[in-house]
Amino acid sequence: MAKIAFLGLGVMGFPMAGHLQAAGHEVTVYNRTTAKAEAWAQQHKGAFAATPAAAVKGAEFVMSCVGNDDDLRQVCVAEGGAFAAMHPGAIFVDHTTVSAKVTRELYNLAQTKEIGFIDAPISGGQAGAENGVLSVMCGGDQAQYDLAEPVMQTYAKICRRIGDSGAGQMTKMCNQIAIAGVVQGLSEALHFAEKAGLDGRAVVEVISQGAAGSWQMENRYETMLDDHFEHGFAVDWMRKDLGICLDTANETGASLPLTALVDQFYKDVQKIGGSRWDTSSLIKRLRALD
Image (cartoon, rainbow, N blue to C red; front, side):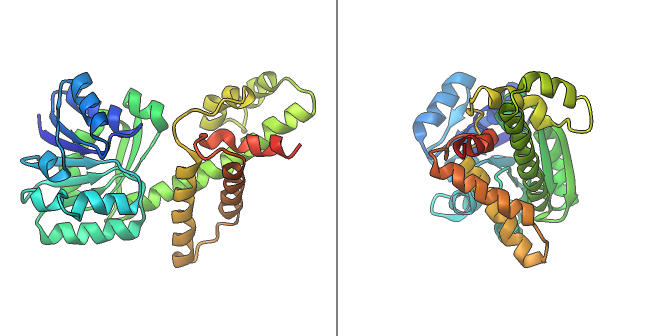
């Protein structure tokens, strides 16, 4: 069993750190809001620290799951940050969805400090984190990935190294691009069924068994029909991710016309008060147009 620090206890990080503690690892957590770290320590009988530097002291692995590029830089290199306190040979595993640019920046800095850095964004939502069945897509050095993979498997359904530093983040962008189009298509199908006077549940029961079936359809159609959008991954965060996708597409020359359109649809959802609704709330925009 390993000594591990976990930085960031949001809807994903809180249960992920819990799985590590339950597996027998020695876990110390840090969260910007100390009350949440205290609550985690009480619930999981672990330890918490007041700063990232204090949390990572003596840790073999440091896992992070924070908000964005700036948050990641903050926990890594700001005053009281993790990098200055990590010992040579320790490995930093970042589960945040951030730009490949900041990933490579921190990877290069980590190299100068003789510590490892793996970008390992996750997919599977709050339920995936709570049930320990996340998809983990990784970039970084093979040898360091091999050491970190058994730790990540604690909360993973699948964990795979895609390539060098930044490859995990690029793969997560592919994930978000695919989700955006699928959710919009599902929203339009359900909205069409409603306008046509059809029983949406009966429609999905039939079409989900054919080529139209998807994870989003299986897991979100009922709550979409019920106008319930409290599944954890907020529209604000999706727009952050799609912004990364679109910025990177401009750099690489990729064409993402559908992604750009759905990003604007999410902007419309924000305008009608849906910033904290989950990503399946695209159907709310269609209903608002009636």
